[in-house]
Image (cartoon, rainbow, N blue to C red):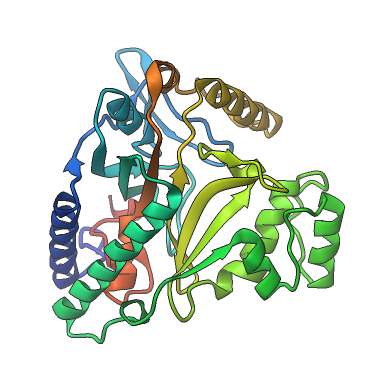
Length: 330
C-alpha cells in the first residue's frame, strides 16, 4: 500500500526527538539556525552531482544539492556560526543509503580549521548516539566508548592496501587495481586518475572504515579538493575530511576555500568535465563568487546526511526505515 510511510511512526517520533536534540546542541555551542533558498538561479558546479531543475516564471531555477552557497553568503554578511536543516535534491541518487530528496544538516563557523570541526563532529555524533540509546533502550554503540579514529587518506591506504597512493601516477593505480583483482567499470578511462583513486578507495578502503569506532579520513588528494583549501605538502593535499561509521560515510567537511579567483577556476574545470561527459552545462554560482570577492572570512564547514545519522543511531539498515515517504511513495 503505497500511501503508507516506509518508516514506523515510532521511528519517526524518535527521529523528531533527535532532530530537536541536535537543534539544542548547536544553540548550546553558539550557533544560530538559518534558512536559505531551496530554489536558486545559481548552483555550485560539481561534475559528479546532477541538480533537479524547476521552471519558475519562464526561468530555469535549481533545487539546491546543498545549502552551501547561501550559507556562505550569510558568512560574508557577518554571520559567524550558523547551521541549517535543509531539504536537498540530487538527480539519480537512489538506493539503500540514498534518496533524491534528503535532509542535509550543514553548518559553518568562522575561524575554525577542519581539525576543529572534526572535534565538533565527534561531540555531536556521540551526543546523538547516546540519546538514541536512551530513546530505544538499545546499548550505546562503540562510538560512546572510544575516541574516534583519525587517518589521513594515505595512512588509510597504507593500512588497508599496503601502500600510499597520493604520489602514484594513473598507470600505477591501474596496476594496483589489477593486483587486487578489481574489475573497473567500462566507463572508467585509463587517464582518469581520480576515477581510479575513487575505485580503489571504494573497493579496498571504505569497507574497513569505522568498523570498530567511527573514523575520520582526512587530507584528500588535491585534485579532489571541491571547495576546500589546498595545503602545499609534498604532494599537496586538500584540507577536507569525511567521517565513516560502520563503512558508511556520514559527513564531508572542509577548511573552506576563500579565494574567488580559485573558485572561478575550479568551476570552469568542473564545467569542462561535465561537457566532456555529455552532461548538461550548469551556470555556476555567480552570487557566491560575488560574495567571496567581497570577502569570505576564514572558516570551516560540514555537510552531514541527517537521514544516515538517524539510521545508524537507531540501528536501522537503510534510510527508507527513517524517512516517511521515499521517492517511490512521494
